[in-house]
Length: 333
Ligand SMILES: NC(=O)C1=CN([C@@H]2O[C@H](COP(=O)(O)OP(=O)(O)OC[C@H]3O[C@@H](n4cnc5c(N)ncnc54)[C@H](OP(=O)(O)O)[C@@H]3O)[C@@H](O)[C@H]2O)C=CC1
Ligand SMILES: O=C(CO)COP(=O)(O)O
Figure 1 (cartoon, rainbow, N blue to C red):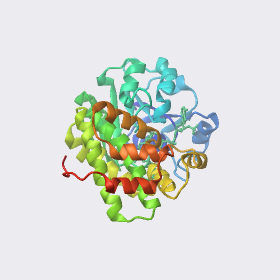
Figure 2: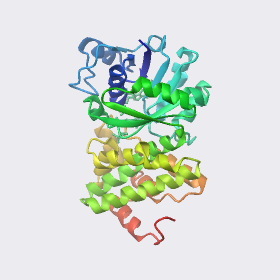
Figure 3: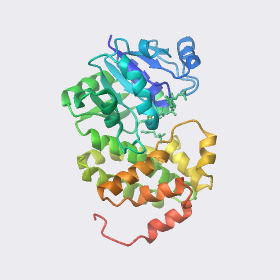
């Protein structure tokens, strides 16, 4: 059986380990806390992140980086985007020589404005044929319950994308291939920002016309930036674009939408951080995506307003009013 190392045992790392195990892989799930690794082994459950879900016997937990990586030809990365560089710098010396990295993360690094595939390349020196991303409408509690879902596995080397596709195709999880790594990553990161804006609209008590308008203009904004950077526009119409946007913006399971809802109800960012330990990537990546749009010369009103609300410089109500009051223009401009 082929061995996969998954870093780490959060919501998505754990749910994706179930996909990998169901698809026939031997999975070693690395946990930052030793007691969580022990719980995974003793109880076949991740009580902190996917409580009540029995993990297949082919998933084992460990807190030992070297042990997790020994013999693994796929290294799946699912930590918060903002800590990936530091994490991977520590793990990289133990990665097998030809192992392929698979990023599940949906964020853009603050400061460098790099996508996760770029961070992985920089830290490990791996070429584009050893770096893939998996992105799509994949809310982890639903995936952990084995509800049917599709996703995209993107790698610049199509043969590698096909190899990973085979390795992650389970009875409940259907992956499509793509060579558009940039489009998939930007779709995944941007939908979190749009999810925050939609959550704010929901928190303010607005209905489906409002949320549909924000979702659609959010897709337009995502596509504008992604295409300016060289993405295939069809990627944004696909699972890693529209698909993930719809899932995130319509589901109360989404941490980003929930974070936005709380902002809409008047909570501050600091209060929300204090109330959860789970990652809402958009709250950090909104400012990186805005900076990326500014650097690229692309208009990004949603990223701009969401960043201002997250930073406490604007209220959610003012954001909605500002969206409506913007200079009018043609829809396709
Ligand atoms: N959840 C989902 O539905 C999906 C998430 N994603 C993406 O996957 C990525 C991970 O998200 P998700 O699993 O949901 O996040 P969670 O908040 O559920 O889990 C975060 C994980 O990262 C660990 N972690 C936290 N801080 C650090 C750190 N400083 N160094 C190393 N590890 C750390 C946590 O360990 P500990 O428990 O010890 O704190 C935990 O294992 C994000 O980019 C997210 O956008 C993508 C698709 C679906
Ligand atoms: O990326 C996700 C679904 O595809 C998960 O969204 P949240 O991070 O908002 O929970």
